[in-house]
Image (cartoon, rainbow, N blue to C red; front, top):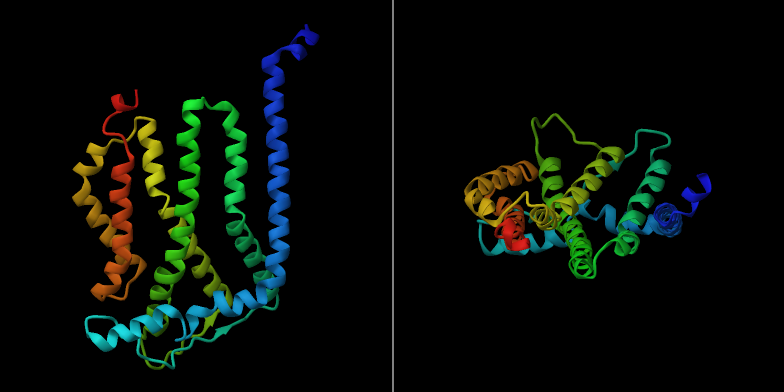
Amino acid sequence: MEDKQLEDPQMMSFWGHLENLRWALVRAVGVLLVFMVVCFCCMPYLFEHFVLAPTTSDFPLYRWLSRLGEISPLFPDFSDDSYSVEIININVASQFMTHISTSFWFALVLMFPYLVFEIWHFVQPALFVSERKSVGFAFFFGTVMFFLGCFVGYLLVFPFTFRFLTEYQLSSMITNQISLNSYMSNFLLMIFIMGIVFELPLLAWLLSKLGLLTRAFLRQYRRYAVIALMVLSAIITPSGDPFTLMVVFLPLYLLYELSIRFVQEKRSEEE
């Protein structure tokens, strides 16, 4: 009986999938380690010119808004060319641990397309030919949207939030001293949150494929979604000026409208 079970093609297929998954994980970890080593070696340069760039007035967004502020008072005031935030370290091992952890997160982002490829390579044999095209597009679209979200988080959302919070003063007797751990926590959190938020159209498409979401539902609750997105934008950028609020709100609203375009009208359409 035991020999028959071993010769069963379904059992062999199951163990074959496990073997493929194991090697996919091994390859993914190997690529991650290679990227980590490269990022670790380049981190001093990346940290100074990329990670810490929003701490000075030379950041591209600040310079651009400074020029806009000269045109109209409706734009936020970023004309202070002396803006600079000093990041301090209060723990003995923080700089070394930050070097390692930041290398890991940078490597994870850079290898994200390869990770998606490994996932696609693993699930592809289980799909019908008619499904492979749509699922392949979903993986590609999700990868592009993730990088676009990280890009928006780095260039728009984090600099707006960081500059407002560092310039906010409860009392003139209080001096802001931003620790390295605090800065990195907010930096990574804000960028990765935006990367995940930009996966909203893909999530809506998947839910529609499962019959859990329809285009009519999203259209019906559009006004409530607008209010929720406004509140979320106000939380992300608490500066209070309408320009900053709209800069964050518009990409989120466009994502919602894009989600409406991606979902099915009703479940019967999929069938």
